[in-house]
Length: 476
Image 1: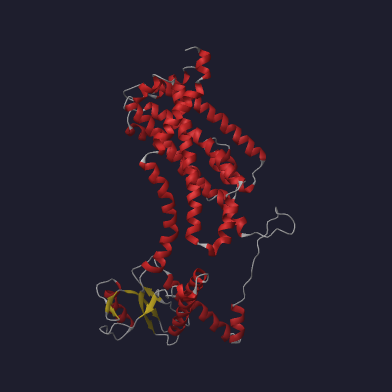
Image 2 (image 1 turned 60 degrees about the vertical axis):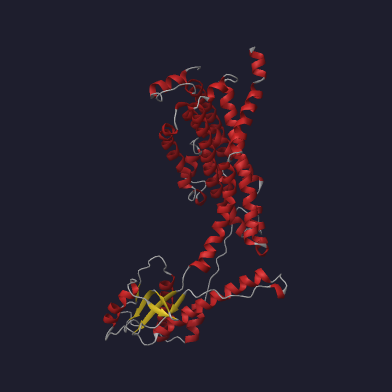
């Protein structure tokens, strides 16, 4: 075949290879399950924590040993008030969900079960002093013995000890428990005691109780303003906050997407090489056509994956929260699904994909087994972790030194610039880093092509560093 004819049919063969790569990957059970798994995990991430908070967390039973005479009642009153607020909030949520339903079809309101319930000291515990009482209750606190609640055995979650001189602050309260993760009860006890002791100090200083209450209820609202917004509209809204942090989510999504599709490219290349399928393919196409077709085909897989994620994610959010939060959902979608974010994501995904895919493709051409490939992948993945480790810091200082410096490192530029996009970085940074990344990607693609051309048919041990540099010089 003449050179002109071959050049004219280059993209024809590229699209044939790309179609084969795309079809083989999107039709696999693993890919389809992965697409379905994303909305399932998103739904679970929304629903499961709420279910666990409402249903799975057991009622915690605790005892109060009050030697202060009156502070125990203050603690009880505060905890009861918090429990009432929790019930009122549940009623409000129930009303929002059922107000549009006919009255005869509404599900009746069911109070959430109490989180904390005080129980008396077990009848079998006898002690003359507080220390003896604490010692006698330790077997219950560590689970060796059970308390009886409504005729059923239950565990004693905590013991609250209020000493006699607590009001004078000579000695603090004690909170005994083996569960160090659930601190809600402890924090509730602390708040109630602190508020009451402050109130008493104010009263002892000559202030009237009503004045103390009035002063304690003073709240100052600090309204955020953005000087970049037009005059009269400087107030920072929830949408502005979402817009500021949304890029961090896009960066994480970009990292997951690049890792997924690059792994596909690597696995396919190693598999075809080890099974000698690549020899059959190269009998019909050139190594350049094969490599380009693989890049294009897997890129199509990546865009298909992201399109599915965005579509199903929006659907899951709508179904999970329901119509009662339409305004909030609409605000979030309005902020996220804009040309600024979606366009930037598409551009930076393409840049990052071509940059890292060239590296993974070269690794695949060098290795005969996935085990060999994993050894090469380790350093690449460690390098890729830097944008993930900094993704929560960049939005706080998007035009700072760290963000600016990392933006000019081509292997990080797509991630960092995507994270800075909401802060309107200087146009010099946008154009300059983009141009540098494109040049670097082009150079990596050329070098990867040389490695791919030589290594794809090579068998045996992976080449040494010196030999690898010799491959990259070939064709220069």
